[in-house]
Every structure is written in structure tokens, then in C-alpha cells.
Image 1 (cartoon, rainbow, N blue to C red):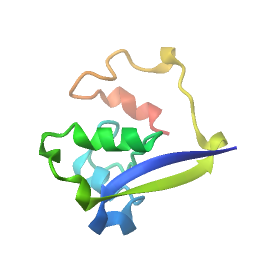
Image 2: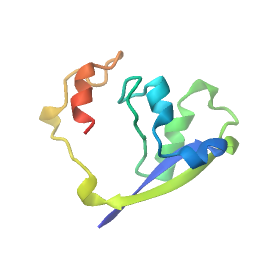
Image 3: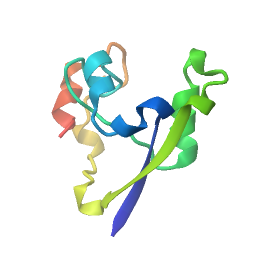
Length: 102
């Protein structure tokens, strides 16, 4: 079974959409600086929403491309709620979250 996820990136960076370089350089919600990460969403709407939550997002969508990515569902790891650190969503994000990035 195939799963499709969506990645939204600036049009000028579309060729590098899956290299994880931006997350490596700046860090992100689930990774610290120095760790490559590619963030995707389960729907086009969620990909756009993740972008629009940032205050600088006005009139920004014309600079982005929405890209589907398909992969085998066997590659998806479902985490049991009991394995997620209690403070996973409290900024600054806990380094404990790094153990769940695999």
C-alpha cells in the first residue's frame, strides 16, 4: 500500500525539496540545527496551513510549489502515545524528542 504525503517549498528551491538542508541549517519543530529533516503533511490543505501559521506568510503562496511524495506504508512508524515524552510540545523542544526521529 502506498501513502502520499505533501511537501510545500519555495518554487526556487523545489529541486532541493527532499535534501533536508533547510532543517539542518535552521532547526525545526522536530529537529535541532545540524540534523537533516524533511517535513511533510498528510494533505495539501495541511501543508498549506503549516506554512500559513507563520506571520510572514501573507502573499507568500505564489512563491511555493506543492509536491506529492509517495512511499510504502511499511516505512511509516506509528508511535504509541506512552512512548512520546510528556514535554514534547513545550518550547524549547526537548532533546528527548530526538529519540523518536528514526
